[in-house]
Length: 214
Image (cartoon, rainbow, N blue to C red; front, side, top):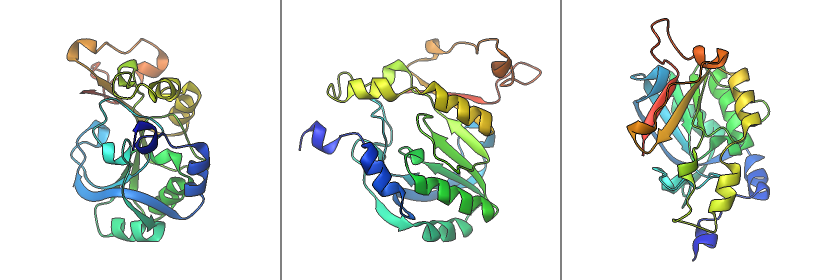
């Protein structure tokens, strides 16, 4: 099967059909320590949703994006599994916010007393979304797979940034930003805007911006 068949981006119709039922396709779930951001070192249950609207050239979880796989599970089963683990739960992907059921799962997890972090690229959102921390990873231009998948690259380039969604997530939730860069030389100091100053402690060290290298 060619790229268009096996790697085709999720369509709006597919998202709608998968999202209206109280199930999610889960690529993996595990317990570990949070490795980044404001919750670093916190024991957490990770639930990885399968399916993504982007195709980052360097994606480190291709089984939830380029070649999505996983088991369709009822939300009740996921809530029950999380109840046996740490208080912190990380809903990640893929892109969990493609699916309405992710919002339903978030509501149930928070009602059960969990601290919920949602990891997202910030290109889509859902009504009724709940989270204690929105971990947003806007995709920079080097993520576009011009060489890896030329037929998919234009759509990725078009969809990789949605400033309206980013603004709504950062206004509605506690947030942190994660940027994936090619080298340390690409790191620049945050611009001196009121919002960026909120990302720094009184000593000037960043508290809500995470930099990772691909």
